[in-house]
Image 1 (cartoon, rainbow, N blue to C red):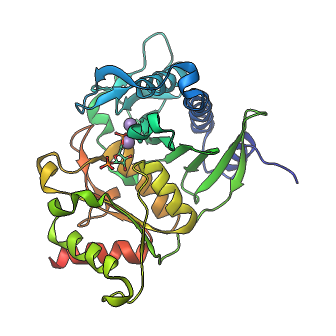
Image 2 (cartoon, rainbow, N blue to C red):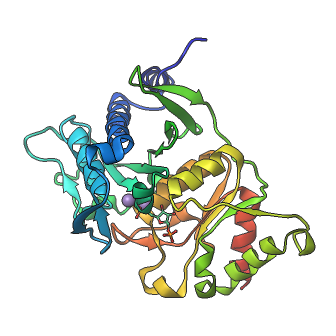
Length: 333
Ligand code: AHG
Ligand code: MN
Ligand code: MN
């Protein structure tokens, strides 16, 4: 069997006119960074990379050593290639302009260097999420305002999962494509062409310990799922919750499902748990490109006009018919 590498895939996308050389370079560089992160994640205790970093990030969350390592890898890999105007990361409060030591390019890269940090120390899958925007024309020095573009403006998005195998999933507008890391060869092999999400599902993902804090529409929806074959849905549903969004979304891309991190009264003033620009938007772009849907319960995630880099939003995404039902309950409510 002839194996197609990520490099060959990207060159073919370029030939089809789906991306230019700069975006291709960007994707290659992100993939290289993902390989380096995978090496660190998989060494675990042997490399002394587990545990707390002893610092807090901009969200006030305690950083794990691997949060910091993954962030540094992504920044160092991307700062010198000339393809970016600036970067932004979950782990850094301010945007990261490209230093004057290097040429600047036309793209903005946003990332969650390590998603699912609470799972690192227990050897459960974590991942990296990224989103690519165009730097506004005529913008000489990058500012936070340059990043304030809705998710529909993303030119590419992707995530990796560091699980039993390391996978990289991406979209540049023409469907969702998955690659699996061949560790001996050090290259990503094209294993999952045109991934799609079935419209219906019997699986849902939510942190049910927050149930008493949810809004009424989510309480209603989940109680109907739990009532199963005896309730209004007339069929049994199963719960899955990894607590790494990448792993939960990856399962949904593989066999369907609905993932929810809804608004709850504990974090109402924050707007939600997940971050719009480097968690919700890239995942929403991927899920929609795979035939699924992604809303806040009230509006399409990709249509939100961001006002802050680290803005949070409620997230409901996955199999289309379930997302539409949850959204209908909110709008009726
Ligand atoms: P991060 O590790 O980047 O802060 O993101 C964690 C997120 C997401 O991956 C996951 O779905 C959710 O937080 C888990 O939340 P709970 O702790 O409520 O399960
Ligand atoms: Mn995250
Ligand atoms: Mn993170």
